[in-house]
Amino acid sequence: MLRKGSIAASLFWLSAGWLVLGLVATGFLLTDLYSRALDTSLTQTLDFHVESLAGELLEAGDPRDESIVLADPRFERPRSGWYWVIRDGNGAVVNLSASMVGIDLPQIPVADRDASGRATAMLQDAFGTQMRVVERTVTLAPNSYTISVSGNFTEILELVDDFRGQAFIVLGAVGIMLAGMSAIVARFAMRPISRLSRAIEAVREGDSAEVSGSYPTEIAPLAEEVNELLRSNQQIIERARSQVGNLAHGLKTPIAVLRNEAFARKGALADIVQTEIEKMSNMVSTYLERARLAARTSVVGKKADATMIMLRLTRVMRKIHPNVTIAFQRPDASLPWFRGDEADLEEMAGNLLDNACKWSKGQVGVRLSSERGDKGTFLLIRIDDNGPGLSEEDAVKVLRRGVRLDEKTPGTGLGLDIVKELVDVYGGSLDFKRSALGGLLVELRLPTARLGGLVRQPQG
Image 1 (cartoon, rainbow, N blue to C red):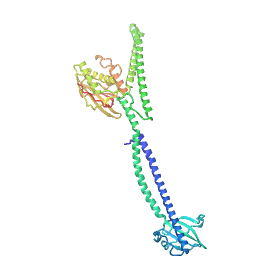
Image 2 (cartoon, rainbow, N blue to C red; image 1 turned 60 degrees about the horizontal axis):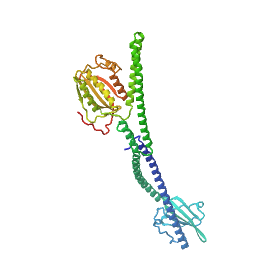
Image 3 (cartoon, rainbow, N blue to C red; image 1 turned 180 degrees about the horizontal axis):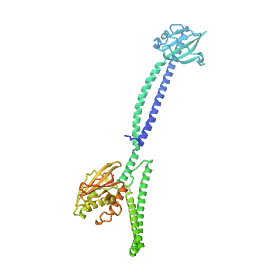
Image 4 (tube, rainbow, N blue to C red; image 1 turned 120 degrees about the vertical axis):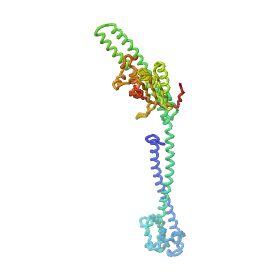
């Protein structure tokens, strides 16, 4: 089926439009040629009858002789449109066909005759019949006579109408077959572009590292350019990672030296330096972390199995928090994969699950599902606990870098901020709600990728 707005559909409608115009023009052209051919044939027949009457006249010697007849029976039938008449030099009728009873066949003006005395014209009889008339002057010493023979042109017009109808029926059938062939050709011609589209989608979904396959000469350079763009993107990301690492190491030592010197001294200046160093350290950490996350998530084609990652994380958390019961509701195999780096998903889900275990009163639930939204399908990770939960004000505070609501609980306060940074980079969402268990429900939504034909292996 041709999709609206596709190149194949555009090619089909363009070719179909020209095909319709061509077939219509062909139909009228064939009809005109057929009409001309019939008219020429009729004129030749009339010329033959004029010659026959001239021979009869010369043989009889008297134009009034009743033996002057034509064998064609149409000249015997009244109102047939087939008439002949012989006139003398004064224009008086001296002999005529039986079909001309009560009919006066007009004479062609002398000015329309050629050098041989022949003339032809289109006339109309008293009954409205269109006729082709041929006249010729014959000399029978000492007198000259004009022989006029007409043929029914209305019959030709009817034949032309029948031919036109049949021609358009045949051309219409041919047009339908050609249109079908045009659609097939359009789809066949667009197959390489469809294959290229699928290959690029496979790269985006993580099924392939580059655009593979052979393509026609017209689009092969496009596939090469896409692969070159992917390679260039990978190189840029690697250089960015390297530069971020170098920057981190380059700033770490000077900041540490300044901090140690400030702590070794007393006074207002030392306090100011310590405060500003902490701001600098937090700012450097923030932007280095963002650069690192952006570099990691800019890599095209990565995906991860959320089910296997959550199984692994729940096993680890059960060992770290032996007093907490973690109930993991495993989804079916149709759950879409996370479109991104596996380590990023572990970091996001691990931080959220670890916080739930720390704040719970011994009970944590984990559920995985997919959710359809305006921007496509999302992977939905729900983690809830039976702890104290969070107020709306606290839910906003915990996403700030370094903020900890309870200083007694171990941690740096950077976990949820890192999670929020990763969620924003991937275009997902992080929501805090009241859990049915009485504590906090965290809903993490992330972009999904196709399974790509992979089959999950059961794990305990």
